[in-house]
Image (cartoon, rainbow, N blue to C red; front, side, top):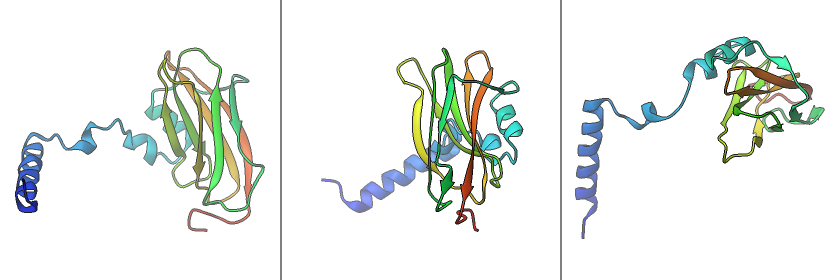
Length: 151
């Protein structure tokens, strides 16, 4: 039976090997730091290689008209477009526009729900990016009565 000290020693050895080869787990994740650090919607879409977005009835956004608490605003996005590869949720007046990104495959229905944090009343966008790089969106204004981003 392995004790705690031996387990810790082996863990440190594995971490050392990963560090030496530059293969830390955070680098293996599909995380686009540029997109999540983007201050505007256009910059976030540019980071994912999407074209200029066009409004579409094939993308739906469900969000409350008035959010009593900006720290937990429920939103849902769905798309009936063919070939959707990702769905983005963006909040225009947040310090960082991109709130969530969902990857879609053929085995996944492009229908997602989550909660986002909003600092103030703002337009919320659901953007569906297709395999050919086209971006389609739906938007809705959500009024926030109690700020969630430090407000």
